[in-house]
Image (cartoon, rainbow, N blue to C red; front, top):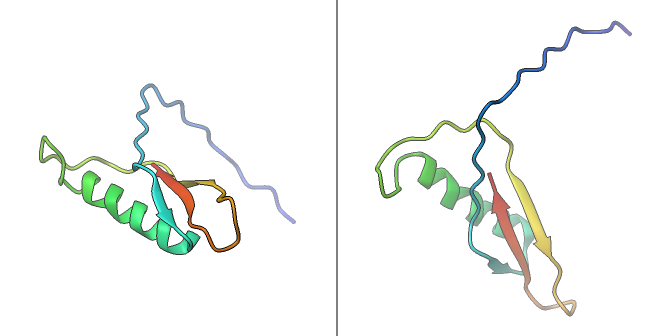
Length: 78
């Protein structure tokens, strides 16, 4: 196996945004719903009508429900 060169770039400014809580039994659907909300936002559907560059991965934060057939709460973070 051959080693590859890696480069780390310093980021001087960051901003995080997230959805409001999404109640859904399906993690897939909750993540999809949240991602589409954030995608619309960065594509210009925001109060400034400006596009925002996406430079980070999407994180889905899950807060488990109290039972097997109850909707968990998810929040998608960009």
